[in-house]
Length: 352
Image (cartoon, rainbow, N blue to C red; front, side, top):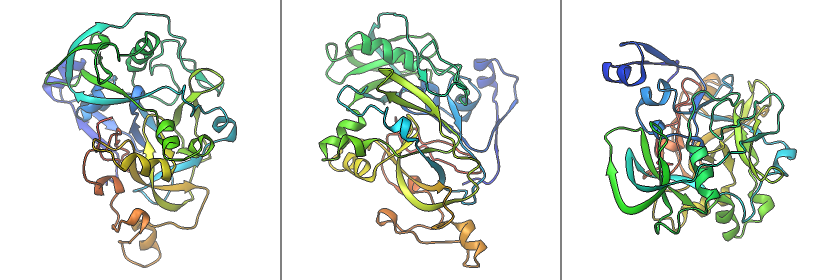
């Protein structure tokens, strides 16, 4: 985990690709993270220059005032949002990366006028393009969400291939269902082949969890959050706001869905792991809850109490000393694990 903001030196090749000066310094600010799911971009799968200098990888921000630097600060989701959260069978499917830096032969998705994301906070600008642009609190744009909307409005990809595979190319806007099983690697991260997966609510209800309890309770403090809205019959955004979050306790490992980003319930997170032969759907990450001073467990807190730098926390049966759960879990987690420099450093462990 880093304790300072990170700088990226732009190489000659990357400078030419993105129209930047050779040797330009890109600063990655504290509290930055990458969105996952349909609000991500193929470029988010590349290196730091692809992610933070290309302008084509949506980046969000959290608050950065809490003491435990290795933990993601969470806020409670307002009840008005939770009551509008769509966890029924009509909820949109999840979008997962199947092949990084790759393309396929595809049937172009039919163009249509995108209604765009609805925002329940008047301070957040409507996004009429269906992309990640013009959304307050998000830097960088991607057309992946627009591509997903176009494909879903046309009936999805089941008629074209068995895996619901589709391609999106950020460099030229190429979007459509794969028409053959052949996948061609590119050697860069301008495009990727994705698939539609069972929605998180379906995972929860199949495990016996009720729809009401499947609605997430916590979001990342200070971030702009995407969620499926019942009222809008589309995605909406809201600002996850509970103040500066200087007090952040109740430390625990929780499952995060980076498409929001938000924390799903333990039951949902664990159900997605059991019997999953591929990548798990959610990342178990060290977190704390804003507005709670007790239950802090981190190197900084223990050092301040004269107990040394390490600690043992028995969440999810794991024992670790200052390491994020995301770095401990073996395998290929599915989410966009993200760089949150200084305050939290999320490690890229997945393939969402």
